Image (cartoon, rainbow, N blue to C red; front, side):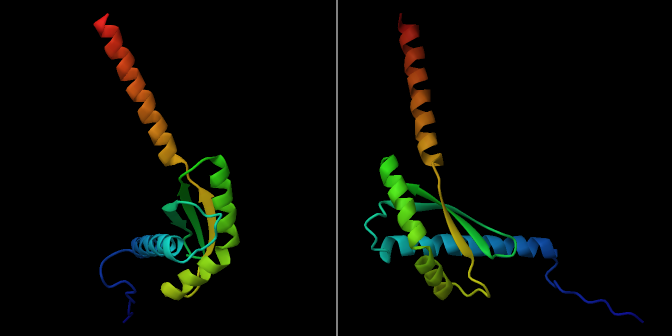
Length: 137
């Protein structure tokens, strides 16, 4: 008689459980880093920055944090430099707030998708106005 071991008793496959855990960790990291940026960092280089998205590796040891910054190009560069210099502090805070075996290495990236969306919206509005003006003539 052979016995089979069931490691996942809730019916989900192992891969689905790993993805669900990665999703939960990703959302927790996003929430905690947002709170740290808002309440704990005092670096004057860091302007109005918000966390847009976080990607974690499958083993949860690396996290890419995508940041959106309000302001000009100079302000974005300064904010990214400030965040990169505060990465150690942010990582230690995340490690204190989220119980993980290994706190992920954090890398910050500038995300300009919101600005691209605003630019495309303005272009579409311009096209609508041009079409509206062309119909009136």
